[in-house]
Structure formats: structure tokens, C-alpha cells
Length: 443
Image: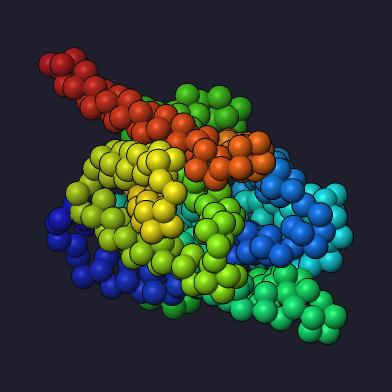
């Protein structure tokens, strides 16, 4: 029995999906939490690292951009490798290698070693996020995905909520065993990824048929439900069953990638740059860490609430467009204030809107992809989007060095999220027009 927005579900569906959610989602959230801490902890390390190794803001931003260059180059091959080798083995490999690279970043000595470390980290982490999004489609029917993706992606704002005070405290270890505080930060935050990678290999089943904790009845129901959805294909004749080269040149994939580039660029850029933005108001490292928690903590809560609402309403276009437009507007407003309080309020609104958008967006995106194109399509959207993320991260540093203003440096994010909002509305109109045309053509 399929659940409709606001409708009832069968007992077997309720018990099966509850069990799958409890078994998989918390563990994956912890894995992504550690992944994101390792990705953005350079933002806190930069408070002292930049001076120690001689990095300008432009250099710091360029290194951040190189992370995404590597991410883009290796993401699609990584996702396809996961399809071939299995989720458990491949996700474990990703986590172990990124943990090792993250810890090794403690030993950079200048701009070039910093560039190299960020490139290697991007290569190591490539495929983890789209791989997990794909993995979730192996376990959750379509009408569960907005809430499940929102629950999984809550790890992103939580990473800064948890990581901010932890990173600020690790910076206080300056001089212990002859190491700088930022070196301890990279080492101590890299180790958990390696440990969790081993845990993934031991505990994470690749498909429902491998889940010994499901009963035969639950396993059969879930596999039949998912197979029924796979056989029905994508909605509305969009991305359909196509070879890889057609997926990568599909207009809907590129449109979705444009939308996600604004989302990704904003969350990644603020995770990386927000500690420096806040400290520019004269705060200490510890004050910066505590204040940086607030926007991400509120975003974590709102992300889950909005994801549940999106599934209940069943309109992922509206649920994507509204918060994305708010994201763009609040970013633009930061250019008109020099107040720490107003800047913090606006950045909080930006992050709440940004993370609220992500669950509905990925539910919308997967509805455009059939099972045959999901692996390449999800990776392609994420990969193309990260081209924009890499450029935006680099531009923020360049503009900050040129103008001395962080608000002006955020202008590329305003442009990307504004363009993404318009594109969501265009896609939504296309979805409404297609059924109407079919209805007119029907006898």
C-alpha cells in the first residue's frame, strides 16, 4: 500500500520503514557529520593557520576551490564504482582515505602543500554524498525521500554546530607536544573518519536482501515496493532510461545542477568562511566558536521540520523555491549592515533557508531520474553543481582581498541562489504544463 501525502499506511509498511530508518539513518548521519567536519574544519584552522603558513585570503579560497576541482573530477567515477563494488566496501574506502588525508593536513608548511592537501581531500571524499543519496534509494520509496534526505543532511549544519566549539577548543592546544593548535585540530578530527570507515565495512548492508535484522515478510515487502517504483521509471518522460553520455547532456540534469550549485556554494562557503566573517568583528577564537554554533543549530532543527512538511504536502517544487528565494534575499541584505547582531541574524536566516531546501530538492531531483540513470544522474547533478561551488569559494577570497569586505565577497552566492530560485519555478511550470497537455490530448 502506497502512502499518499497525509494518508494512511499499512502496518507492514510502518514497521518496515521505521526499522530501516532507525538502523541506517543515525549511523549515516554520524558518518556525514564527521565527513563535513573534516571538510570545513579548515575554516577554523584558518584563524591561526593562515598566518603560520603564509596564506592570504585569496590563497585560502583557492585551496578551498581545489577541493571541489578534485571532487568534480572523481565524483561520477566514484559513484559508478559504488554501483559495481557495493555500498559497504566503497563508502568504507571513502571514509578511511579522507580521514587519513584530513589528519595529514596538519603537516602542511605553505601554500603549495595546502593546495595539495585540499585537492587530495576532495579526491578522497568524492562520491560519498551522492553515493549515500543513491544508497538511500535502495532502501526508501519515493514518498519517504525528502524527510530521509533531510534527516541525513542535518549532519551538515550539525557538523558546524558540533565542530565549532570543538575546533575552537582544539585551537587552544597550541604548543602541546610542539604542535600548533590548528595541527591538533586536523589530527584529532581526522581519526574518527578512519574508525567509522571500518565500522561501515563491518555493519552496513548494501541492499535490503542483506539485512538480517528485517523479517522475511518485511524484506519481501520492501523489495517488491522498490522494484515496483523502479519498473515505473521516471516521471513525466524526463530523464528516462538513457546511457551515461545522455544523462550528462540532459537539460534537466543541468537545470537541477544550477539550482544545487547555489545551495552547495552557500552552505560550503559559509561553513568555510563564516568563522572568519564573525571574527572580523573583533571576537576571540572561543567567542567565534560559540557564536558560529547558533545559525547551524537552528538550521538543523528547521531542516527536519521542512523536510517532513514537504513530504506531507507532496509539492517539492514549492518546498524548494520558497526557502531558496529566502536564502538569496537574506544574503543580499548582508551587504547593507555593519552590525554583528544583524549580520548574525541574516546569516542565521540564510543557513536555515539553505538547509531547509536540501531535502525537498533531492526528492525533486530523484523524481526526474529512473533507476537506470540514478547513479550517474545524482552524481552528475552534484558534480556539475560543485563546479559552481569551487568557483564561488575561490571568488570570495579574491573579492575579500580586493575590497576588504566580506559582505561584498558574498555577492557570487546571491547570484547563484537567485538564478536557482528562478530555475525551480521554470521546472515547476514544466511539470504542471506536461500533465495538462496530456489531459488535453486524451480522448
